Image (cartoon, rainbow, N blue to C red):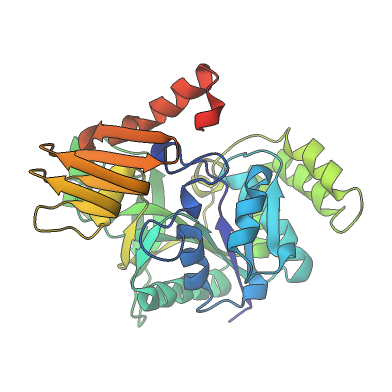
Length: 359
């Protein structure tokens, strides 16, 4: 097996997690399920099969302070700062340029920083199975999550030929990536079989991925090469800032995965949740006998099926069901659980009304 590198994408803003998630400390830096933040849990998971020297993180400059505070276990040189967010393809391509300098044939595992994953041993086995395909077949591998219900909030991956052979974890050639479906379409996917949720987890040989960028995103490839040429030079930061701001914002799914022919999938049967809103945090949290999930100090009377989180002080909830209440500093959110996706509208409203002190 070739040398393994891990890339953790930590540049998101987490607008659906306001008020816990703020510009200076977005969702990935929050301790939602214990003593570690989501980012730190992700690092710990990868450290089980990747040395800390080979774990890279890409984030935004505005998050530098909290990122460095939470990643003292990593070399500072492994923290890569985007001048501005440009979606996943430029982000992964930039990190690949760093890794290629050291080892173009190394295997890179790519993950968002803010997913909840349980059963780390099964996750490790799944990643290593994907790494073997990436190495032997020069493939770009995605980890597909076995669907448990007809979700409409995830993209799907349709598989073709089963290439599992004697391996313990099922493996396939990929037929196509498909957009987030409506409920009827999602139900048809599950009934037909061979469809997996798109987890956003990818594994590939660094040189193979860079070749794919060259083929399917030639302008981005050219720009990344210009940036790479000045790595370690005094002019690097200025060159990165100038060039990167002008690159196209595009996802790795649109830019590479929907076009490349050497795409494979390994089946992910570990517990996985992309934590898209406070509702998903509620659903994955431990609950009391009234199905309430609590973080911080609270008093709950005659209420059920609710999520209550207090950063400081105490929250009292009386006679309310199916609500989310989150208090952080001088901001408080109260909403019905089925409206959790709309929290981002609060952030939009605060921005448009120039109330950045609450962001």
